[in-house]
Image 1 (cartoon, rainbow, N blue to C red):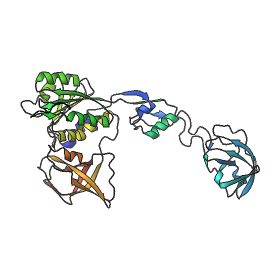
Image 2 (image 1 turned 90 degrees about the vertical axis):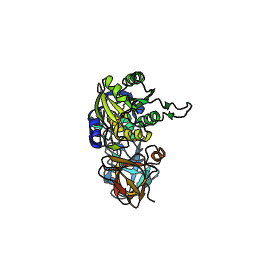
Image 3 (image 1 turned 45 degrees about the vertical axis):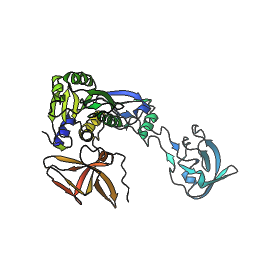
Length: 404
């Protein structure tokens, strides 16, 4: 049985990106670019004004001065009139710089009257001027491969005159729930039956990070049903099963996967909840066998599956943020396994405090709703008490802990 760290390392060593595809520029948002985008021209491509104002010679403006207006350059126009000594040319933001100009004076620092402009203060050399290639030079890598495409990268792609971008392909992730006790959402819930909620929590988590979930439905507790559903699931890039991974009479997942040629790299991890999970490969495709308990399913997805899918999407950062918090309360742990505790986080005077998010029984879903993170009690710790430092795996990337 691998340790928590060994299991995550083994998984990440056996997953990789799935190649790339070309998508339209807006469809590249939140994707990872799979090529270096080179600037096709200098940015800016010509010397230009950074302000609405007047193009002048700095030597004419070393003290307040009055200059004769001899021209006008609008944005999108051409600078056909040079700036002669004792003269100024009116210019708009983004317009090309006239010959012999070495400074721009903003309109608000001047007064214009009767064909002249009064420069009210000393002018600095090259003030408010933009120069060719000062942002990005032609041939320079404007967006390196592996970058997550955000609105600024979309702007750069457009500036590079790119209508499309090559990004890493999204993996399709098949989700298979197992068990005769399950019924689908919307069906009548008879005695002894359970709603198939895991399929939806997994699909939502997969969709959240940008992969493509494919819900296969429910495999009933017989080999034929398992084989049929798993064969379908193995056509996807990744297969995730839920439940049936332990050693009960009806836990058929591992046996059927072996029959289908999926090689097991490990079964069981030193974590609680979620210890019975397994990881396999079928023709290079990852197969994750998660427990059926909804809380254990979500936690094992977070800790083991999510990082793997992010790596397949081309992400460099695959783990959520860890913070150190001060625990408030008391939680016991059976030694030998890392225990994940669902916690609520608060920020007081520069310190993060972690409080139990509710009943830690793995059958209690509500504590997962209240959790901002997962506190990790080391395998050799038997007790976590108030005031003890604890590492917390922050679940929400949007969590903003406000000073109170």
